[in-house]
Length: 117
Image (cartoon, rainbow, N blue to C red; front, side):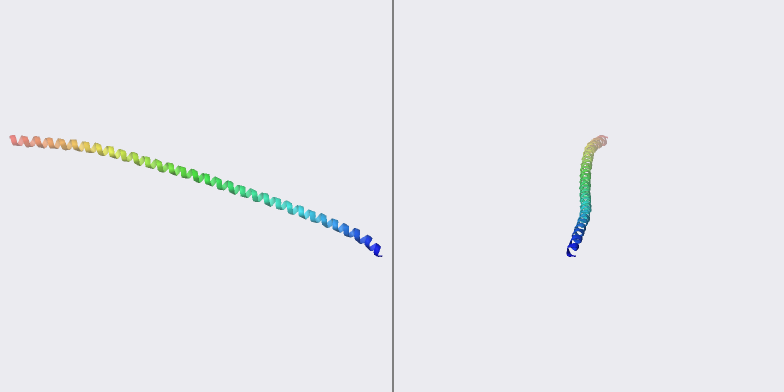
């Protein structure tokens, strides 16, 4: 009886062990597959984030350069306007001196004319 039990139980145990090994192997393979997919997605998302950050950095750098150029352009315009104002001031001063000289000459001429009359 004991021999019969061992002859029936041992093959059944081996069969069960083999089945459980197959099931366990399938579970492990599915787990490794899911873990691999998760790892790939993680790395893809990380790469996408890095690319986005680099893109934003480049846009910021471009914006800064454009802002700097605009600032330089404004300063250049201000410099040109100052130079133009200075030229116009000098021209007005020369014209004012010419008018003043003419007024003085006319006043002297009128005084002489009045004194000689």
